[in-house]
Length: 88
Image (cartoon, rainbow, N blue to C red; front, side):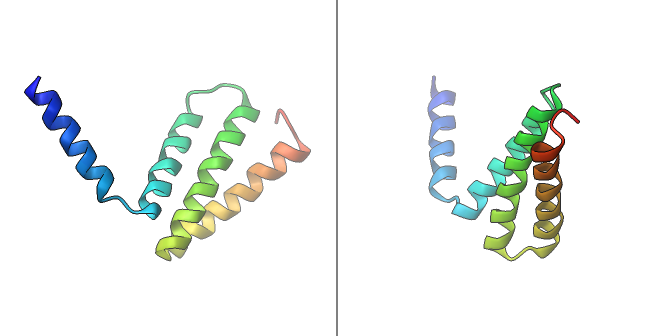
């Protein structure tokens, strides 16, 4: 029980010290990894596109151009395939 209380305390401390940019970075990572759990290509592309948008927001907030540029390009590629070539 004490271990659980310590774990909760550390998690709350972590949440109180996290920035908005970090939240977008973690969300982006979750969406990118989550995309690997699906087999339908359209679903993978949608989830990956959401991750790319989160990475673009994160990168813009911390001014990380090497992260922003490829994720913006990947988002455009995913959006193209979602809109014009669904299922491919």
